Image (tube, rainbow, N blue to C red; front, top):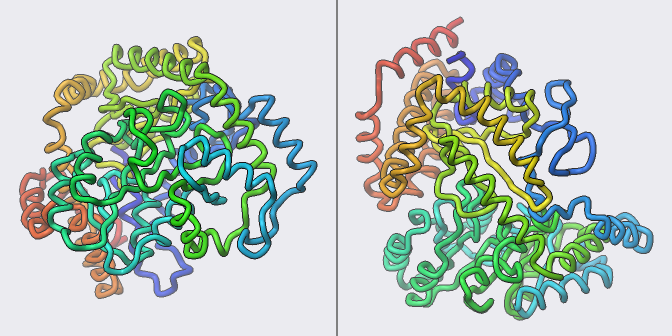
Length: 515
């Protein structure tokens, strides 16, 4: 493994610099040494987002099969959607030019709110100009200090940040576990509480076990916010998302949140719920009241995308046929797709960071656009690529992608002897929950060990220790099912590590710091 592959973004979160405007110098050296890998990020798209498209990475232009865009229904280049956007641009101009509260919004915005309310089955809808901002804003406007937000441990960062901004107590429960949710609700009895779930968890690609989870929340009388970013228009008989997918009425959840950047193929987001609650949020979500309304050209396109997606089920049917075809082919190659049952899913390769990036470069050169997903976004022993299948793909595109995977990732894993491990993980997934949890604690132990050496050479030890303690609490103690056991679990994980390997890494780091 090359020296730069021993580290991740987590290792450069802290800094010794006196000025916040000066980044850690070690980060600059790390990105310079690993420039070949960093060039994979933020590729330039040389045209519209399509199933097969041209991109520029590392200064090279290539035509690639695109498995990295969430254009699930293929509407980004639909002629009717583009024409609707042009009409809106011609009539309403380029932007709303002010906050909707003070400067107003167009009748087109109001039409979209009404159409979405009718589509979702809720009384009222509120629009946001950002996906991340909408999720963060909804929770920060809804919760108050002293409230408890109980989140699935794999919820999106915008939801986590929204709770923190509200200064509510943040508590996680084991992913998709009705038993763990019940336990969390029992322990917080008597508090104002909200449960936050997602329809599809995009990093793992599995859908929420909504029937089991809602049975628990109903028993406790606690409301639910459901993030349908990846499930809206893709799941359900008429595309209404995860609630419809499980045959439940819209009123089964208190708030339905979704973004426009996936199946709608635009940008922004919305939240739907009871009229009195949405009217309240308009005044208390700062990201709404103090931010510009969506550009009318976007609103016009979204309206047409909603119309096309709900005319019939043809696009959803093609999407799911494509998903079935690709997943069957990938599994036949021995690849680990986790527990995915959706159109977005991982290809998990294990803990070899060098391989993760090298094979991403190889896939790109062969004509396949996939992005690497590294720690701390996922555990260090389950680094992955994330695949997004769309209705716009043809079978020939998917077969080409599978062939490139076979010649790159599969070949490399077979040579490294890890393809068998991948198959074992996939076949024993039922018992993998505990192992994944243990691996997360071991990742933390490794990280703390590396940071201990960094602190020893730090010019600002007190600040660095304070930063590290805060991060460790936020990311691990808060997520522990029993926070009081966090210290013991961390020590146990540390005892299970291969310290010889770690020691060698620390010695190398010590030399680098000393030079």
